[in-house]
Each structure stands twice: as structure tokens, then as C-alpha cells.
Image 1 (cartoon, one colour):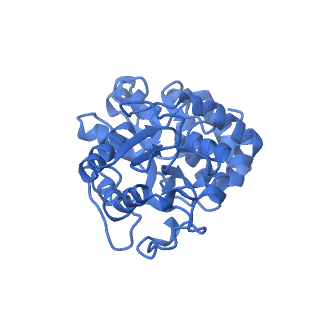
Image 2 (cartoon, rainbow, N blue to C red; image 1 turned 45 degrees about the horizontal axis):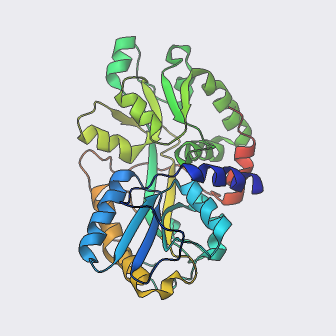
Amino acid sequence: MKRLLTCLTAAAMLAVTISASMIPAAAAQDNRVVIYSGAEEYRNEYFLQRLTQEFPQYDITIEYMPTGNLAAKLAAEGTDTDIDIIYDLDYSYAGLVEEYLCDLSEYDQTIFVEDAIAPSGRYLPETRNGGAIIINPEVLTEKGLEEPTCYEDLLKPEYKGLISMPDPKSSGTGYMFVKSLVNAWGEEEAFDYFSELGENILQFTSSGSGPVNALVQGEAAIGLGMTAQAVTQINDGADLKLLFFEEGSPYSLYGYAMPEGKQENPAVKEVFDFFYNTLVKEDKELFYPEQIYKDITFEIENYPTDIPYADMSDNTTEEKQRLLENWEF
């Protein structure tokens, strides 16, 4: 755990701010709300636009930071932090920070599907981020290659240098593919597989968006990437295709929360309530429609429906640390 936290803390220095000005070190004033978010830039921009419209009386700032770095920052600072609201917190990192989050039992969680509910009740679900095998048909055709039909196909020598995958040590997207195959095949067989797959990998990218970017640019023919990002690119005109193999779509769950004490600030509480009542639903409607609500579904053009999901059980902080300590590829 210490090793993981040390690596994440160092990486947190690379965070990019999307706000107009840097957040001061001094404690925020009562009308100031500081949100740290691991969501993509276009989602954060949308959130900030909506929050500025809804709460013109408040000074609201959103700062982007990858979800693992978010967890490391809060774990290092505890409740003495400038974070008022933490958004897009990967559940697999929650064990690092749960003790610093306020109780959210006042919010009705029966509206969510069972597997999205956090047992601690200290963070609320907001995104199911699914993955797929994504291909660029044009590149495959140029190389005279067939579409893969299973994970084993990706080991074929003709795909050498044409596959992009995120590095599980730096990307939650990369890790969810590893975890899904560990659950499906067992740890030894899964790690043997990735050892062989490494021979065909063009690059283990540092972020989950890397494979889709490589596909769009024609640098790769096959990517292990995010369904939502691929669909966004398809709707922008990219020629990509999504495949789901027998083991199903790996996925991660993400949530949002307030550090203990922040809920006592009326401005923070109002903004958090707006996420719960309105903004999370808009995020699903526009960007990430995969199901988190029991009785509400969303549709986006070209987004696959009836996705076959992988077994993602035992996706805990401790299990993630253990598996990543053995990742050598």
C-alpha cells in the first residue's frame, strides 16, 4: 500500500488545471467550491459551465487530476485538504481515502443498481466505465488482416506492433482488462497471457485514452480501450469498431464524495446536491450511458446496448496493489 501511495503521490504533481486561475494554498472562502475531478476534459468543461450557470453566486473551480492521483492527494492530506468535492474516484482506490470522507447516508442509494453501491456509504456512484476491444478496420484491411474474434487471436504474430494497451500501473483502464482476465482465467493463466501479449504491443500507454488515440491516428489496428471514448470518436467521424469477446466487457465504477467537514459549508453542499439530483444524470445522458440507476436508462448514438459485462468481483484496493506488484510487462 505504501509503495502504491508513493507512486501515486509523485504522479499527482503532473495534474492539469482547467480552471482560469490556480487554486490558492489558503483555505477556501465560504462562497468558493473546489472540485478535483478525474473525468475527461470535455466532461469537466461541461460540469463547470453548468455549475457556473446554476450557482453564479459561488466561485467554483474544477481541477483535473487522474483518479489515482486524486486518491493519493486526499490520502496524504486527510481532512486538511483544499478538496471540497472529489469526482470520478475509481472504486479500486477508495480504500485509500474512505476514512477521510463524510457519511452520505442521507442520500437515497436505493435508486442505484446493487453492484454500484459503495458498502461504506461514503461515496456515491456516478459512472460505469466499460472497456472493449476496439479496431480500426481500415488499418486491418491495409495490412491484409482479419478481425480478431477472441483474446487468444491477439497473440498471433501478424498483429505484432499493431496493438495498443494502457499500462495497468498508470491506467485504471489497463488494470480493468487485467482484473477481468484474472477473474475469468485465474491469475497464473492471465499473467502468462499478458506476458505473451506484450510481444505484440506497440506501446503500453500511460493513460486509458492512449489506445483510442493511436487507433484514430492509424498508428494501431487494435486497442484495449474505453467504450465511451471510442463512441465519442465514432460520432465525430472516426472509422472504429467495438468488439466484445466471450469474457465480457471489463469495467470500473467511479464515484464522488466530500471530505469530512466539507459538507458543513452550504455552498459545497448545494453543489454536491446538484450533482446528485441533476448533473450526474446529464453526464450519463451526454457521455457515459452505461447503467448505474435501477430505473433510469440512457441512450447515445452508436453506443452499444445489452453489453455483456465481465466478472469484476474482488476489485478492491488491496487486490489491485497485490496484482500490480506482480506486473512486469
